Length: 263
Image (cartoon, rainbow, N blue to C red; front, side, top):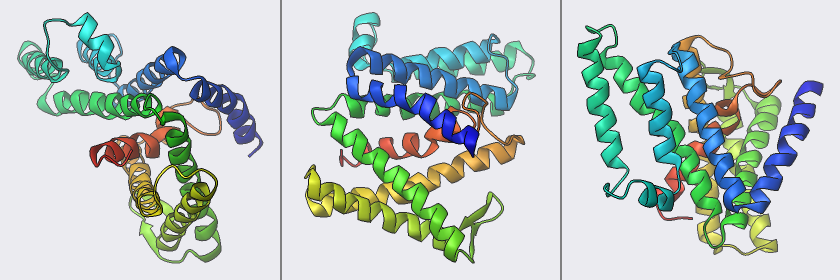
């Protein structure tokens, strides 16, 4: 516990400051976090960073996470990032032939899905902060995620009896999950009383979506780690694991909120 608290303070203060500052420093932070996330995924798969699939994964992640105006200025002959995604797909499929199937279709899928997961997750982390009301919106979502985690933990400890999904995360309970949702809704109402960012109906809807899909994102990361037989996604944050361990809910939730135009 002591190690977790020290890490939270040492890593949390610079993160909060960069969130507050925004602009170019926050853009670089988002790119850095996306790079760490894709490196953790490649390490789980035991794919070398400097192998052709590893290099393609890093490049594709960078192209996805970079700001749109950067993309427009650098790649003036390309209309959309999907162009590079399709090019990467064809290149990776070609590698299955060149390697005589030592690099196979499943690994092609892993590279593409990992790049999308890390790239778009942190792209929307950046995009949310750069909105006109980006700072309070991002703080609102972060508070909802923390409220969900805390509510689920304490409710599960106090009342948890029915396992939520023991094959993936044996400690999570149905009661804890419901407690997380209620905690997020309560925090959203309190936030609205002090800073009316949305109308109450929208705020509660966002809280419910964040709480539910934030927990799904956590389970997705747990399933991924269980599949590859690792305890944590990385060791960057002692006592907390890796970047994916800490941001799994956030990078799952933000694309969904943008998809439904709720932020």
